[in-house]
Figure 1: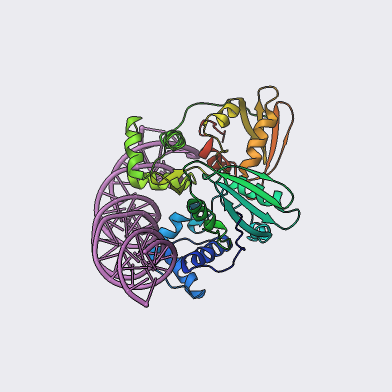
Figure 2: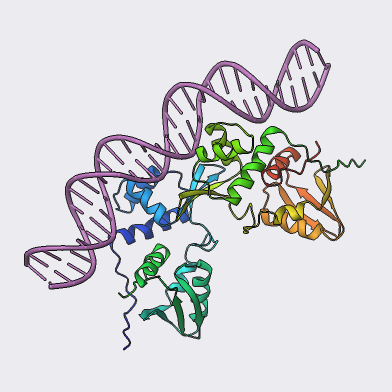
Length: 168
Length: 168
DNA sequence: TTTACATTTGCATAAATATGTAATATATAT
DNA sequence: ATATATATTACATATTTATGCAAATGTAAA
């Protein structure tokens, strides 16, 4: 029997922090975790260097040499499509209506015409948990690889689409 | 008056080390500079952590989270085209015959038919010193930006095509 | 060659980052 | 709700990386 759970905007503390970290490091060059602590404070998020170290690792954020600042943090292209405008990806994900599972098949429903755009995004991100995707006009089916759980996939997804909640 | 200098394989110590470092980090996951020291020793290159720190910065090598090893060093895609086969780029650059300058114009001569492939590589690398390129069948012209010297460009080029020597 | 200048290096150390551990918070099941 | 299991966090500290400086090496010019 089908069970749809509506796409929800509620985020837990950590997921929200991920989202703000993404926003910050995509919009300005951040050279160190200490610097990031300061920026986060401006967004009313208090945390410690050790937490950030773990967050950045979890989010697959890379540190690369930078002409002016020595080193900066960046979201690798596989995760964040290459663009300065940090809204491209969310412009697309905002068109997701709901996402649910039936067995090892995931079903994503989007606004009319957006299924393909979302599917392309998903394909590009090369989720290790996804064996394949097929997109229609407003629906995407994707198949989880054997041995991969919805939860594992949900974790991965939350790294860059923290707004999208996956049902259990 | 034209002056052509043949593409030479002689490298100085540092440039040679760059080349071996590239080779190593492209062919296996390296988690730390200490680990790299050990691998380099196997290639008869002795050096220190501080030198590697500077080398990796100079080469724009990034450090990214990695499932198994925690973190590994990688050559960003803008610098190294995305491939596991680490010879794609050299397959192309091996077709460079000579490279020289006249004023602020660089001339690259390649084997017949390869000019375009080399030019595409150059364009992709987005050298800040290059204002533009034009490719024929076996010749590429590129224009240095105002304020950029051949030496600056040669330095950049040596980061990923260490074999290609630029005349002074 | 010799001198003058620039580059590269190692050493020692500063700075930055990662992580074991225990405490806290959160979620899940009864 | 209460108990049990999971996940998240800070603290302290270990590990890793960056860098000032002086010595050494390499380069260019006379």
